[in-house]
Length: 513
Image 1 (tube, rainbow, N blue to C red):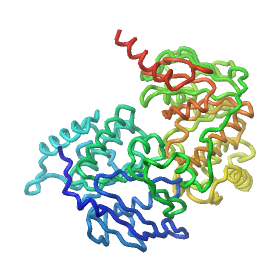
Image 2 (cartoon, helix red, strand yellow):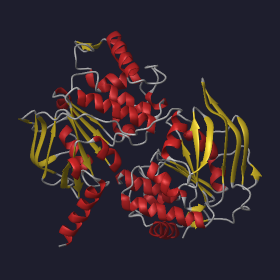
Image 3 (cartoon, one colour):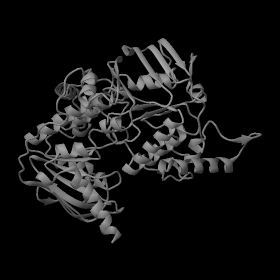
Image 4 (cartoon, rainbow, N blue to C red):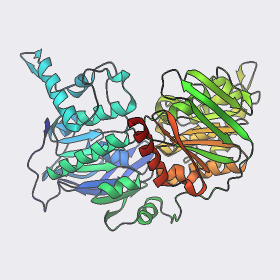
């Protein structure tokens, strides 16, 4: 295997030792005297709200940003003037949430980019192909080394990033939300890999908001808040409540709100829906006003494609979608908005937001056909600023400057900008695809409160989620999808984690028979 690890330092000395690390950007102190140490063979979780300083800290460790103050020791040596290239050379290998792949190159070309095998200036393509294939096989990833990256799913791009990080010498591996795009099977493979790396003395820094992952993997947890080191805890003795309270600075007793569902008339009615690419097959589903309808399933089961088809983003081969009892033929995103349907995509960066544009423009862009925002093709900027400012204040966007580019915001605040669009026009149907992906517990609570307010106002809300506790807690009725079909519809006392998982197994057994 191409994973190369070196002899770790003595167990009484940390592999990585940061002391008093500070980092300033224009007008912002992103890190304020942070201490962190990681031992060889340890998985150390960084835990904190979006904007707490986690990303800045791992960028400092990876050599992307130089610290303004503090000391940095790695393998017992003082490190100065670190660059990304030098970080990889000494064994620090990051996997960032935002991928750093070249879309037009193949998987194997991306793996060896900047470290190509050559003799006399001639590339040794065969050797690189063999090494790439061997590494991918060892990792257990379903990944074609010769496939172009821009033709891969996000899950396969994530696998490519992980493989790229593990090609060569690895002493410290940094994983930033690595399972966000992976299936359960792929996540299991990653956890097995982590266990092997720990046994080999590799230190790991792991960024995640998922409590179950922290429980399964962590040795220690360091909590950051507002750029400061709050506390480092032993994962075996820290409770979820302890971590959330340290992260937010306030006691949170309930992670999911009590939502009083009052089901009314059927607003969305899907009958025998089949998509052109076969990802959804003969699905029947309905959603009522005054309730949350959940859709659960593993990554790749067709649940995201289903809500995208309702909104008009996936071509339909057969079946019918009715909105308020009227067949909705050849749906498009523009027509869906006019019919009162909102869609919030899982991938906010690729599909949801224009990162270089200000919050004001991102929040209003779905309502520019309304007279209150534009007349005769001329934007009414005063009305736009007033409306968006009030909406962002209601959603507690911090800081509330609506002229900031969206790209400067944390994941939770980016989600608030998308939610703000729903308040710029009259809507009755809300389609949420993975609404809590990449956001912290505090931001999740605000998203859930937003959904609760929608339901109380009589809207029909459909929530797609790979997080089983989330979709179980929020939904009044729950559809379970498997291999593009509805495997079960669960309500009341039947809506349990055991029954959801049993639906997967029943479907597998039916297919095997």
